[in-house]
Image 1 (cartoon, rainbow, N blue to C red):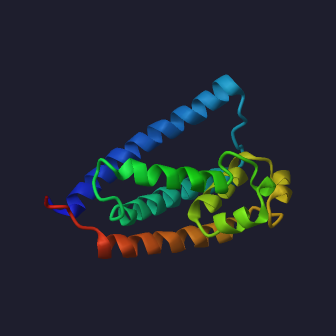
Image 2: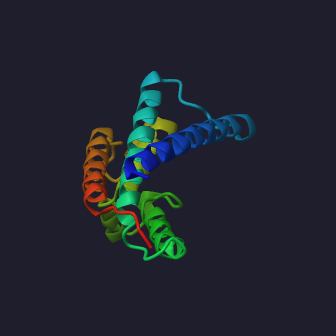
Length: 166
């Protein structure tokens, strides 16, 4: 099977699943936990491009990284610790500005920090931007950094991906 056919099919499957999960998460959050949804259309536009660009970036980087594990069975043992560490450093579990400066600087090298910061800009009041390291949401910078990581991921995916014929 051509790799392009596989990835197109996989992209459709994952996209549909992602839309369903997002709708459920937002719906349950609003209904059961009282999460206030943004009322400004610009925040929903930001949410949309963050979701699309973040998904594309993560997918490209995941394909590029697929050369690291030696087998499908060992992939989660290699990938999971890296993902958890990046989530920790990127402010997914903790307030980003409360992390040590060196962790903040390290996290700023990776797309997840920027994606989480962008999502905070959508769901938190604008006054919370002052709590960010740069005292603003930096959505323009977030967009550029995610585009850069997407380009890096696509470059390495195209150059390094190959089907294992074993």
